[in-house]
Length: 488
Image (spheres, helix red, strand yellow):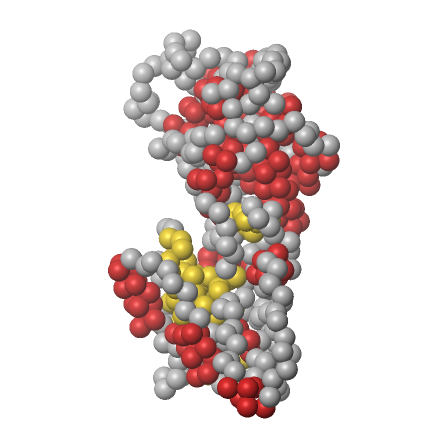
């Protein structure tokens, strides 16, 4: 990579914008042709900065955040000429995201800014009272203040792999124009620092959403999320980190955007061998019969781990967030598909229906499998493990063989006596999303064709259900007695 990296043409104007770097001036902006100017016809940067000072947004910022933003401005020359950092809006393992005002917004055609335009369209300005002005009045009239335009400045930590940084920028560039997916405006590099510029999307906090959302609100939420996943999966891209903080939802617009592709990758890009799950059932059965476990296991489980484990180690991609990892990720499947994102989306739906956040709160992969087993039962977990050539065993007495059905689980989690018809419909969608076998799990396109979206139930009440009506507890949990479990 060169001393300054920019993707292009992501943010284009009628004239092409080029950027360069030298020691005397951190950024040189060069335009070939005419630049877009404001209503006064001025393209001078100093005037833009003055107007920005007039429209400063008042936000309470911690002193530590101010120091952090000041440090970025000092170590990244020229960034303060383009952006006014307002506040820190996100912080993760690999990056920090700041809200910033784009000081040169009106110098370029910003096709990516449909979200902020939609917000302005929803706000109806009061009618103005016109009167005829003399020439002197026109000269004495104050200049109209410009509405500040905000972007999200993502500072990627220097500890991140250069290949992973390049991969994230390339994937965002490939996904430009996809509905409900956050577009990449541009990216800059100075020495070992990389900054990506993304649109700023006002959204509500998920910690409020999961307490207040009705099923109708969930329908709009997941229609937007699945629309984004259709576009992402169409490009054979695995997001790998679907969770509430990576889907910024605006309940007023009933739209959201999928963000943070730092862990995303193309399907099959990290090939480490073919998993047993891609083989037919008779091949899996023969592999299990010839495994070390089948030939050396005893009827009584021994406590602890074997002192000399002769089994070969197995490596697989485990990227993601605790509580949202799909079962095939926990079982170290080496042939992971886009279905892992659908499981994570199902966990979000389970959180909204059960009114518990986080719903899964495991410390590691072993605890995560125990949490799943407490829901699905050991019988179905054994079948899921055998699908990937793994063995699942547990001697925890509180974990049953058959597990629970989703309706019973949601009623227990949300502390209601019964579910409404709309909640039952959402529960049926949940069952299709949280399927242990990825081949049976709904895809994003199939989820959008579910009755939850095509034939929605209008029976919806606030959290707590309708105590005046009663219904059965639903069907018992399906008995998934696979041949592999019988062998085990």
